[in-house]
Image (cartoon, rainbow, N blue to C red; front, side, top):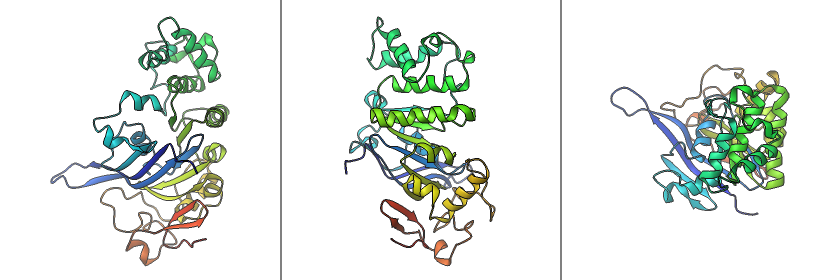
Length: 320
């Protein structure tokens, strides 16, 4: 197997909480391992508060991790670039935000942001930038007549395609897509998702897809990683993880999504929220898990390979 483009090893993110003394932390991510290869779409799924967007922001270098390694082509960028991401890193890794209207400047025409990216990274000159912007719009299925329109004059789907065109302008190797279809009508979600699939297949770009929409993850992703309380519960091929999950949390999440048109909805069974502030020992899902045993609250769950490339973090999982 070829080495992955992106690797996270033991990534941890925490935020200090108010009060005195300041020794309490909100643990948004804990000991997360993740790989994304070229031409691969990896979906991060889980309910709200699971740490999906936090990890996406860590990869995009908008959020610093307090522990672990972020390896891009084997180089730990957290150590080599401790003061923040370099321009070279920004060129290789681009972020598509959740809300396309908020991520576009309402004062300028939508082509302005794409043009600035091209000029900043040296992909165009003043003489060629308009031609390059039009080509970028065409690549995401937009007509050149939209270049001079303002964000309010475009539909939600068109605005999101502009945001994708802006990310693609610098020819990145990895795209972090943070809930890219959650603000879109159902009729255009599939088109945007297929655009990401085409980018991965035809151009060998890696995509980290952050989503609470399990149906979207099943449609386009190669592998899926299920998060809960900032920790990985299950990971492996998307078709297997999302259709036949083995971890109790992943099974409840899949069952809830089937009842709510693919969206990660409130889980049935025991009420509660992810324990991210001063989490107790053991599995973070133990207090809500209908299958919990005493070992679940005593120690961290082992990592069990239930099938080739299919890992489950659970005391009750049985190896292949």
